[in-house]
Structure formats: C-alpha cells, structure tokens
Image (cartoon, rainbow, N blue to C red; front, side, top):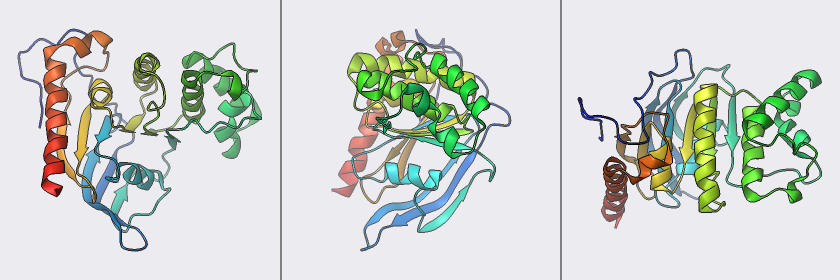
Length: 270
C-alpha cells in the first residue's frame, strides 16, 4: 500500500489531507460477488470499507466488474452473494458515462428531473436548481437545450442533476471518459471542489490512472474478470490539489505503481 512518509513536505500543488467528515455516509462491502445468468462470474468476493466523506477511485481492465460493483452499491444490480452495508436512509446519486439528458427538456428542467421523480416540492426544486447550476458553471444557460451544449457542458449538467438531490454518496461511472483532455482537466478540478464543498462520499470508476491519482483519497485496483481487489493505494496528497501536482516526482511514482499493479494483475490471469 502506498502511504505518505512522515516528515515529508507535500509536493507542489497539494496540501495536507483533511480529516474524514464526521457523520458522512460510510459504505462496507463484505464478500460481494456477482454471477450473471449463464454462469459468467463478474465479481469474485470483494471486501472494501469506505469511510464517510472519502473519495475512492476504482481502476482495472475493461470487463473486470468495476461498473457492476458500482451498480450493486447503487442498488441497480443485486449481488449474488455477500453483504452491502450503508445507512438505509442515505440518499445516493449515480452519474453515468453518458450524460443521458432528455432532449426535449431545457437545462433547468433536466437539472430538476431527479428531484421531480423523488417528489421534491416545486419551490425547493427551483431553489436547488439555481444553486447547482451556479456551482457547475451553467448559470445563464437555464433555457438552453442539450443539443446547444458542448460535451463538457452536458457532463456539468449531469453532475448538477445528481448534486441537486443533495446525495450522501455519489457514484461516478467514467463520467469524464468522452470529453477532450482539456475539458477533462477542468471538470476534474470542478468535481474536486464540489466534493469538498458538499462533503459526500464518492466512488469513481475510471480507466485513467492519472485521473484516479488526482481525485481520490484511495485507489482500488481490480484484476481481470472475475474482478477482485489486488491492491489498495493510499494517496498522499491533500484534497486542495492543482494541476501542478501532476508534474511532481511524487505523482509520477504513485501513477507508476498503480500502472505496475494493473500489469501485475493481468499477468496473474494470463
């Protein structure tokens, strides 16, 4: 496991890690596995404890069960075996790789959709929509329609729609995979700010090792199918990160170790 060394100064672009947020939602996966109809084993038993307010990134090869694991946490897919523990009254939100916006609804209406489905009162919906659109930089685009938005703006709207629920935990399934590199960097910074401000617990699935190291408190590495956890890396950088961090030797060492762990897991299966 990668940990910070006592007495070291933080690298450029990083500050010390704040304590986990008291009262935030903790999630525990105990022996979670998944076998689909036909006998395909997607997940071997997975054990993972996520502290309240923690940001976890999950990396692994395509088809290793990363998204399946996220969907089990969301309640969209049932585990075959094992136990998932989280507060029964906790509110979760899921952000998919595709923005999945309704083309006939404008930005305002799309941002309020999940609240509408949850029965949130109209006045409260309007208030929250104004807040989240300002948070993600879409104030002024309330009357625009999805076809008028760039790819980055669509993902901002998808995030706003989820954040409007004021979730206790946020599940992100490669939400930045389809945007260009410059936009991706900007959205990563915005996501980090939103996480710090709102205090939700986060789980991010990504193929991008640099994205995982830049955003997360811990990085979980999974093997090829059936997916199992092979390594867990503590990220020794603070939550108030800047792009300068990516140019530091410490960042390069961490991403190198994560990449090596991915290669090692692939060799074991072969």
